Image (cartoon, rainbow, N blue to C red; front, side):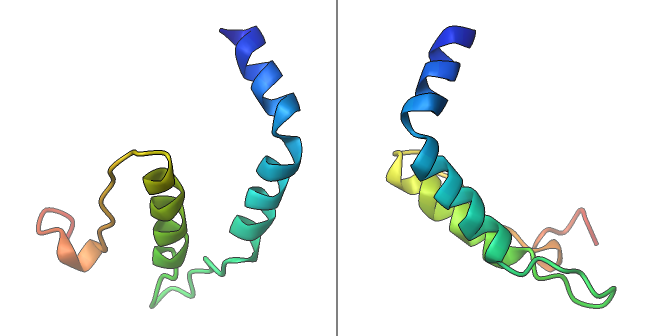
Amino acid sequence: MKEKLIHYIEEHKEELFESLCEMIRINTENDGKNGTEKALALYLEGKLSKLGIESDVYSPDEVEAIM
């Protein structure tokens, strides 16, 4: 398994690096009043969707148990 993962990373280095750069460019700074993490969550949801993986994005104000 470990060897497969290493091989995949080596074969997709450029794509993985570009994805990492895109994620770093997304502002996720939390100023104490408003979080901006949702933009990154939506980006990741899009990436997962392209892989055929379903996901849901929630904000704290949308989840009753968190508030």
